[in-house]
Length: 378
Image 1 (cartoon, rainbow, N blue to C red):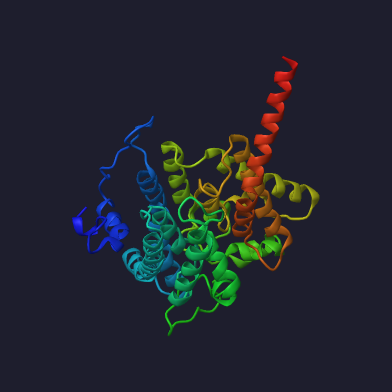
Image 2: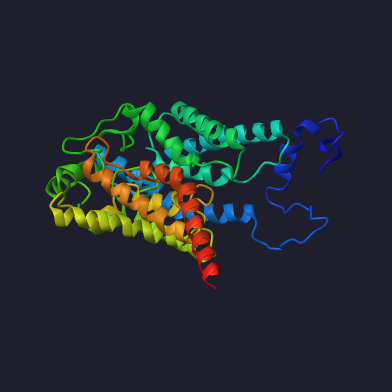
């Protein structure tokens, strides 16, 4: 680092910012001076980069789908490159706001605390534009990002200290503060100011009709297909990156293969959703097949990229099974029995974040008690 940013230099008060730019692409030259330590190539920076790469397939599909849904909504013939260009023009500003606002607060907080700037926001900033409507007003997004980063992350000590997922809390802030822009039939289709939906078109997501039954779901979504594989492919209205399960599964493969995310949380979340959905089918409480919940709304995206956040999820191996199962079960329960809020994944994960420390505490307590009993018997 340049001497002017080191202690005693004229710009030492900017040393955290200078260090962040210097080590963005290069590994810092600092090493431990004494004591035992682990030499490993996998550090926080590499974990964040792998996580960002895993989201790219969902981002690319979301760019195209934003333009594709726009073409369908106004009655134009969908053209691949025109749809991609339209999607880029809509989504790039979301990323600019997400990273400019979020990183500015991260840098300022690190400077105030005199600490290094961590790479934790790289993933958070990548996720936020993918879980909101493409047409969300940028000033609303800026306020939500600022509130989330400050009050969910920085006040608790920064990266690794937050107990709630900052990206998901940003969406929750938008949903409860500006419900008209985050729900309804007009929210999920991107339109210019001088455009309107053609007759017969609807901007509602398939999830909006789950409380009305399977017949309502099929009839309401006729414009984009209502079969399981239509939802699996994802050419439907919704948040930018949440609709294509194929792209999300590619990201899941990357995360599991590299060991960045826990497959136990993903699998148990699916099991919880299928169990509650299946019981509702058997009891006659819902005629929507339980496996449809896996490909509708933000379930797949939340399970793969949100629930597995290593900071806010359960840390014990047994706790991961309980934590994931709880999220999947609560998500489907909210979807089926709360007609005012069809998407339960956001609330399920945030609730799971709150209970994760308690789950780990109980798992560890049970393990220690069992070990203590065994030692007494021995």
